[in-house]
Figure 1: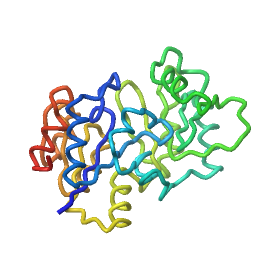
Figure 2 (figure 1 turned 90 degrees about the vertical axis):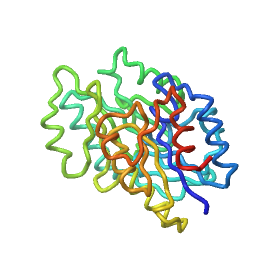
Figure 3 (figure 1 turned 180 degrees about the horizontal axis):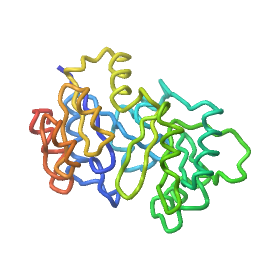
Figure 4 (figure 1 turned 45 degrees about the vertical axis):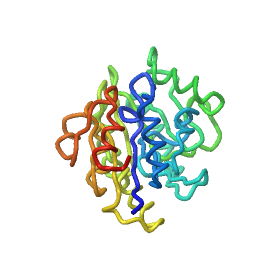
Length: 261
């Protein structure tokens, strides 16, 4: 029976330097050759999933923005955007609280021009997105986003930010003071469930591979949750199977373990 596998990107498909192990490329190709489906399932918004090497691996589709955007065969089949009023509230409150923000959409990103000095990720966004990366200050066009992320820096009133947005967003705290805001009631797991219902795929025939805190619900929602060897401890604790590190053929070994390749 055909199986469906969902792959996180960061720390799963590629490493901190965005290098994809050759064994991972070969494993996904073998998975597809065996008749199975392969989907990217990432916390990144679609606009920042742009690597040609990644997109040329043969994935059947992309679940992006923690389940708030889904495409298959290059066509958008689901998208959940924040309201215009909420976008303006995010910009206003985070500016008042001195918390630099990245607004993440399916086609464009909007980024604060202060507070991200010497931040390599923000430099990467401007470089990779080109004309699709905008500075928030002074922008007067439509801002269409699925989620947002922000940094806690010196002077940030993080307690007020949490109080303002706790009712509407799941607030995920990552390493290095990075905080991710995902619309409440949505996650990689809800994206997977929506897609499986849309395609009439039994959840017990699904697999997911991830490494981070925003992968927890994803791994728990599928038939078989797999943690990379380089995963954060909570991810390993809830996974059905822990594979080897990304640098030690982790994806390939996981797919071999389950007989998918």
